[in-house]
Amino acid sequence: MNIFCLVYSYMYTIRLIIYIIFLSVSNMQEFDGYTLFTPFSVDEEVATTILINNEYDILHTWSHDFFPASMPYLLQDNSIIYPYKVQSPTMFAGGVGGGVQKLSWNGDVLWNYTLSNNTYQHHHDVEPLPNENVLMIAWERKSAEEAYNAGRTSIENSLNEMWSEAILEIEAYTGNVVWEWHLWDHLIQDVNPELSNYGIIMDHPELFDVNCGDVGTNAGGPQQPNGDWMHMNSIHYNPILDQIVLSSRLQSEIYIIDHSTTSEEAASHNGGNSEKGGDILYRWGNPQNYDRGSNIDQLLFSQHSVNWIPQDFPGENNIILFNNFHSETHSSVIELIPPIDNFGNYIITDNQSYGPISWEWIYTCDILVPMQGGAFRLSNGNTIITQTHKAKMIEVDESGNNVWEYTYSTDQIDDYWIARANKYSVEYFENLVLGDINQDGILNILDIVMIVNIVLSSEFNESADLNSDGIVNVLDIVQLVNIILE
Image 1 (tube, one colour):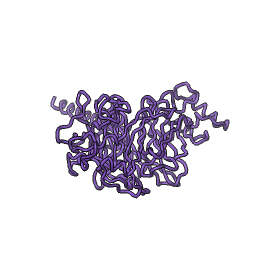
Image 2: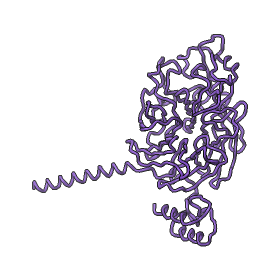
Image 3: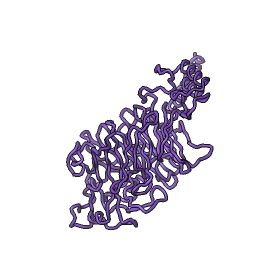
């Protein structure tokens, strides 16, 4: 009896260990999806957006005549939104762009819009909206006279200009501006009581101090003289809240504003779901910007890639971002829970800064990323992270284990950057099965037979060109076989 119990106990222990190992291994699985990114090198004449699977097979590519300003976005109709750099921007600084295109799966330009003139210069990120419109971040030119009239005390650049920030919503296909928000409408200063925006900074966290930070910087690499003040580098939209979150590298702070306003309300302090117009609803990362903290309270440092975690994802409705200079030698990914109540109001206590005072989850990178960088939560709880200057993407699980990684390079050039990348589930695609040569909605031996016949006949069929190299050959057959075996 005792021997039986001992054997049973031993077998139970072994089974428990195996089960724990199984759970551990099962939780260290990469997300089943396709990764979209645009590598960039000054040594290349053109840019290419690439879609790969977890085995690094190139599933599709899009060629561009212009270099990327930030990351591309894949839409569910299999088209992409591509922000790009125009040839002669009107204000040149890190992340400069100027245009945005929508391209079909086949690479046709469905619409194109440029925002580069004497008043506005698009830069960095864009955000596709559910209504097919696109939000664009833009520098907004202000003269030294306008800046001084707003209470600014000094201009630190040879242009003698101060470029503020604006968000413009561009209607797809028409190019009409259907909504706009301007930071310049929401300033405060405490140096000139004769101006209308005079006030006590700490009493108005919903407004931004016009004297905060320098005007003119080399942020983003060696630059020409510029009037960059805020350096907004990413934008994201929350369709449930109808709100926008922005990231300012130079102020080391993120901001949430109301999108439910009209443009007129966005220029005021009233209206919209928040009843606060275009004022700042929430800000986090550097409370000394509104005189409710000091440098020891600063938690963000030149951050990028701020976005809400989608609904039904682990951490849903939390905010995740890439913090470039978390320490002198490390960057990090931070997830935070914004202090929002049941009525949609962001909670702040008198004379205190916006919470939280720490993060909900953090992943610390063992490398310092000098600029840009990306972080997006995936539906299985993993997080995909981009180390920009290394052209490297890694995927980590909730425990911080590295479950997948990829570094882009070619035989000729290794000096590439990737601003940010995201991963899309296989189910995300509409009416598209990669390698479905006979278009019956499934991948099987019939598709292999058809692609073999195409190769033998030396014909070209775009749907059979799985690696998008312009020819159909044995490499496409191998790639299709691998996809089917998956």
